[in-house]
Structures are given as C-alpha cells and as structure tokens.
Length: 363
Image (cartoon, rainbow, N blue to C red; front, side, top):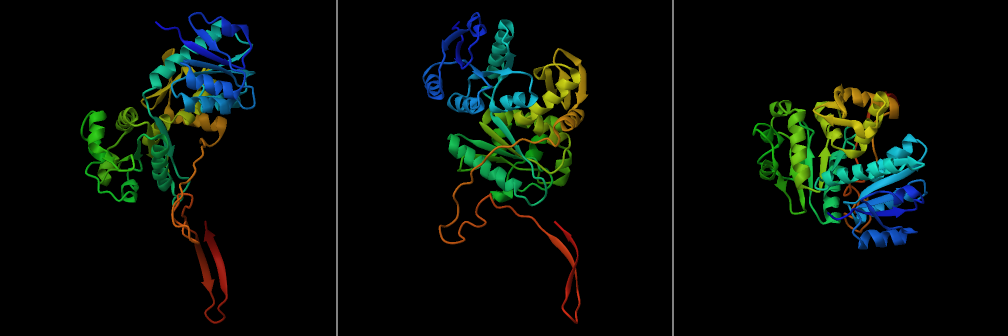
C-alpha cells in the first residue's frame, strides 16, 4: 500500500516528523509554493497552522485545487469561534498546540477516513427566506445555474416547500413526476431519482414539490433523507429550496448542510462534554457515537444551538450573472439581486379637505 503523502505548511513542530506510516513530502514556505505543491504533487493530507492571518483563505484555495485532500488545522488555545471557522473553511480535523504526536496522528487518520467517505457525495446547500417575497426561490434557481456553469458539472434543485413551492413554475416546466410520486413509490434510489427528476438544457435538474396538497402531508423526514442521499450521489451540487418554517422535514434538510451541522455538533458536544466529532445526527435524533444510548431529539439539538449561537444560520457569497440589456434600466428586474416584498398602509382620507392620515403601516 502506498504511504500517505503529507504537506506541512507553516507548522514547525517535531510532531509532524513522527507520523509513522505517513510521509511528509513537502514543506512550502509561502502561498505560491503551496499552490504549486497541491497542484503538481499527489498530496493526501495538508497540515496547516491556522493562527496565520491568511490560513483560512489558504485552506479554501487548496480545496479548490484538490477537493479530495484531507486538511488538518493546528490552533493555539481553545477558541470555539476559531474552531468553527476552521471547520467551515474545510478542515476535517483540528489539533491544538503544543502538538502531541499521538493526537496529531489520530487527527490525520480521522481526516483521511472522513475525506474518503465523503469524496463521492455532492455538496448540499439550503436556501430559506426570512419572510415572504424576498426571492429565496429565485436565488435557489440562479445559484444552481451558476454553480453548474462555474464548475462545468450538474446541479439539482429540490423544492422542499411542499405546499406552495414555485421552482417548477419559475422554470416554466410541467412536471410528470414530483416528490409526492417518489413518496409513494417505495424505496428511493438513484434510478428512481433519475426517472423523476427533470433535466434542463442549462445542466440544472429540478425535483418539484407534490402536485396535490394531500401528497405533501404524507411526506416525512425518512423519505426526504432518502431523496437527499440519492441526489447527492448523482449531483455535485444539491440546492434545497426550503419553506419558512422549522419542522421535521426542514430539520432533515438542515442536517444535510455541513455548516449548520458543525454549529449543532459544537453545541451538543458542550452539553455532553465530548468532542464535536462524536456527535452524530440520524433519524431525527442526535447521538453520542461511543454510546448511542445517549441521545436527544433534533429539535433539542437546535434549541441547544440557538442557546449557544443565537439564530442559526451560515453565510456565503454569490455574484449575480449579467442579465438584461445594456440600455438604461435594462437590468432592473432581471437579476436575483433584486427581490420583492409588500408594504401595507391603512389610511384615512378627509373627503372634503383631501388630508390623508396614516393610521397604521405593516412592513
């Protein structure tokens, strides 16, 4: 078996030279050298000092060059926010300074196991609107299209607003099958997803909401998880358009999203006094991996997360494509950067004087 090849970036510690079967093959001094090594060498693991000001940017850059590499970050202290930021950037494991040889070796082994188990799974992104009419479904559609175009691969949109979703109508398609049909078809697998999903010319595929209201009521988190798993094995990017409420189905979608999962793991781990990596989510429950008898409901995990971090959420960035004409006003209304909402005012008008008095306004 080939020895795992390690790149060490800005970590000057004897523990990196005592990793047994793992071989340190590169120690770049700057970002340019790091890019050259990651792009030109077969590297399995990157060990990086996260205390440097540009460390998180370097992690993101490395994973853009080689998505399968396992990243182990090294941090001084126990700053929870730094830990979360490292996980969000793409670190599979984090080791604390001063480094211990055994701890570092275990972090490397765990990072390799996690990277190997997830390499074939697509990324899951969920979009939820804070209020009605803010354009979250429009953002979901443009996000899927832009990801497919930028990556040269395919992206899928799952309309999880089961009662009032508009993904299909925004793409002007008349679906033959919906999520409701999958729910009644038995076990959901990749073949069933491929039959039901609608492939569009722009490398985007959509799975519409149920056509009938009673079908929506029959969908539960078990079916939704099966759909997610099958879709993630087929598509590099899966976008979930969510309704504006938190229930079992929406919670299942949130569990599939890596960033929010990290926050929940951190909050539950603090409650259980364990490592965040020991907290697992499955079947609407949070489990302690070494002892699965220790468990709480997913709703309780969300409560712990909100108690620790406030309203749960994660952010990203998105550049809207150039749309519309180049004449004055030609871009208005043609981009998902614009959204729509409604303001309602109650007024009283004096018919004789024409004086208008605003009684109440809803925004």
